[in-house]
Image (cartoon, rainbow, N blue to C red):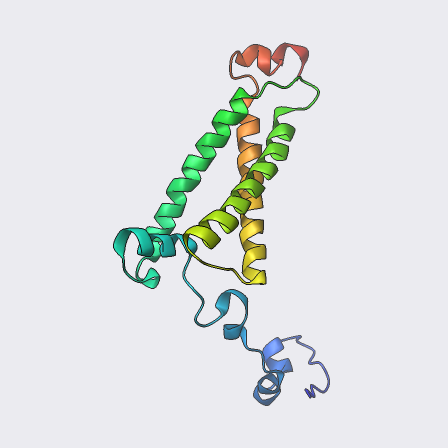
Length: 169
């Protein structure tokens, strides 16, 4: 039980909690979430260690990051190519289409990554909190990619006509 007494007038957290009181709180930041001790390395570092270097994943954090960056660029290029092939009428703006299809694309990448790459190729099963972050990260990637690609497609063929500058826009 934590006894704090009266709140000091300075609202200074260090003054508010004495050392003994914070010890009683038993806040173990090192054991939770991203700060967990013994947290496994990234899936890309695992892939690098298993199929390229034959070493330990913890020895290759930079290679894993660069590998993830490389196939992220390739996935973005594929999305841009597929998005350019799509022919939609003007009832929905390109940015809106980009957000919609980007979200779908991000979730498809996430499903492929978790079901094929992690489970089948690497033999890894993520914990519930890790899986949630994995899916959230890929959704954000898809949304960002879709918004960016969508905002770049309008007016590509004819900038004056595509952006409708003559109509006051």
